[in-house]
Image 1 (tube, rainbow, N blue to C red):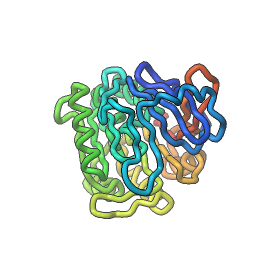
Image 2 (cartoon, rainbow, N blue to C red):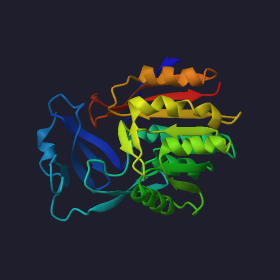
Image 3 (cartoon, one colour):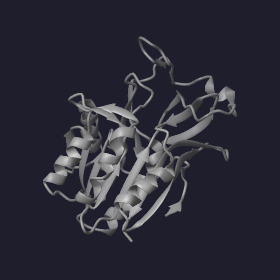
Image 4 (cartoon, helix red, strand yellow):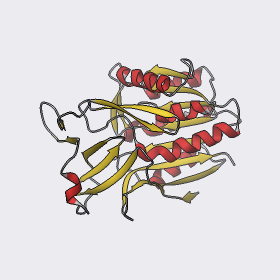
Length: 286
């Protein structure tokens, strides 16, 4: 078991421009966004850069939370390698991608290119960046998310990225319930990715609380992994757990293999400052 913090410096169509005072300033393609981030406790390096943003997210009890500058589109597209992602302002501070996970997308593609015929299960898959990156390298992907609207975005992203209609199998379902169903059907995967929120609801009102359900979900992993399993990734956000806790949890159910864990951070442009966004733990077959 080894601690290994991961950071992304961004890419041509994404950069962390500045951060501070509980907010972050990011470049997504042609748009400059000002969003809250509780980790940014320090002062902004360059306050002048924040003056002419295209969109600002404001906490509000009612009404629109995104304040858009005149002429700012409500939907737009960014690229990562050969992947296209549809982004939008739809009422919450997330716009359709977690850019700090670009390193994981890269790793999935490397594994897919090295081993033919792999199957991947992506639980809490959101708008599908990891699924699409994997599918582009030949991995057969099952993508699970509780939101029907989000699944439609996955399909749009996959099509825009040049994938065939059946390249990513999409499922609107509660992640834990579906994982148990797959185990009962004895369906196996070589790669499993999990991005569980601290709290969420399934399509039929199923309540997900990470402190109550994560152990139950992780316990299903041995039944879902094939004898040729390659990789398991568990990401976490704002749930009060440490990365080491995630690592111990994976080691408890998958004792054979090698585990790394740590923080995920974005490096600010033209600065040594790192903004920590989440934690992860990763199991790899030795």
